[in-house]
Length: 161
Length: 183
Image (cartoon, rainbow over all chains, first blue to last red; front, top):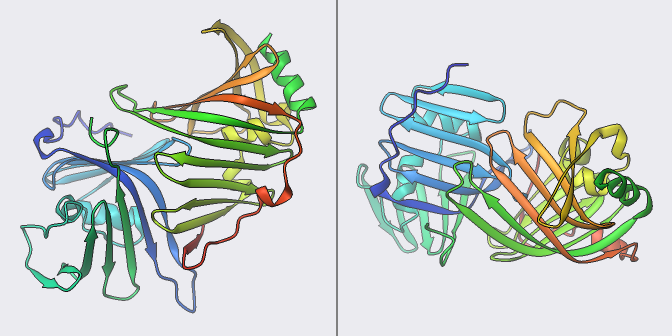
């Protein structure tokens, strides 16, 4: 498969977030809940960036890279292209998760590119309820099936290089 | 050489305990993440990796399933052992039949450790290379390079071979209120 032409280095100024993340898609009477957990590293920003997911024993299980107009998902032995990040995350997690907004949610603030509403525990945006308790975060998609995203940022030195 | 050490280990060491330090190096070599904890195993196919630092996480294989639990996220996932273990590093340590699953080749001694390369016989795109290191007959280290070139090295210390391990160490009890994902 064609290698993604070497992407320009993700916009390093937007910084680098790392920690652990779990996504749970609630089951219903017909099927069990799905999802998973992994360590993550998030580079760049909504426009151009990279997300790497690593298993507990240290194996890199997925790498997503995106630039305007193209998003690619590499898994061991496979690379697939998508039109945008939403299509990619729908493939990766079974449900679209607004990765572009994550850059801000993980910093306990709404994403600037979409309206939001403050709530007692945090804020609501893009149909999600976000409750930041840094270094932890819980984001719940309000529409069925409920999707719960939990993140825990690495603290101290090993978080940012 | 290390191939004999590994064969002896696979044949003679039925159970064991050790402390481990895990260093994961990103494919570009620029980022390292260090974690540590305790490892216990009993053949066949039962092991526990209990990470204590920098965060609490446990991987338990009870002989039929592999459970992973993250305390901060309060979420557990379970997977059938067959698809989880396969040709993974854990199979090398606690698997039932070493020579059925892996081709062994002695490598050069390095840093006082005799290394043996274990190539999974079952085509395994997730692993580029897998090797175990011995100091004499004692298990010293394991190194996995995955399909992306990410390197995960476990260094073992305080290794106790053939010590009895309580059966409940290989059972996973879902903590109250935790999410469970069955994959």
